[in-house]
Length: 181
Image (cartoon, rainbow, N blue to C red; front, side, top):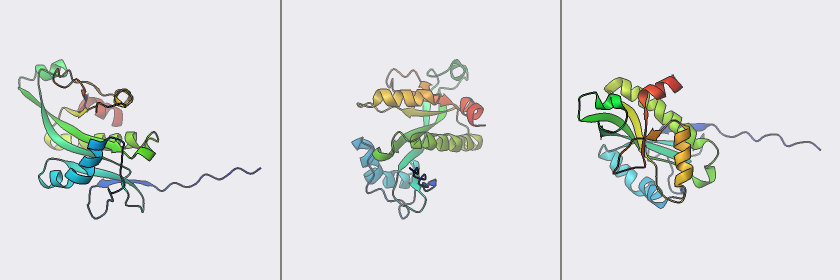
């Protein structure tokens, strides 16, 4: 009995958000606040300079499969590694991943990893232009928290040590550079 030939998957495209090119209407990652952010708040936050966003789509299809956003943030120098504390400044510049999400039917297929690798590669370029010590994100607390925590830990993120936000994790630019080149 002949086996079925593998179906060619369209190429994944990750591009900067463009309202005219990216269809967000059917997106659902299973976490309501992120779905609402993408559909209702993202455009306003981009207009006001709060975030920049990148969308993942299949080549030739405008439906958003996943996305991430980046913004600037400063964290207290007494958090994180000792070298931040020895820097002699009160705050450390970092790049903040405000949101990263994958459409529910695409989860578990490597898209989240692809999005984070794209984000971290982009962050290296940003850090080379303006300086940033790390990439920081908050692991969302819901019924998938443990799975998310393990996912980010597997990519090299470690707890920042913020007593006000124990779900905040980071990965240093040095570690990203060592991993991604």
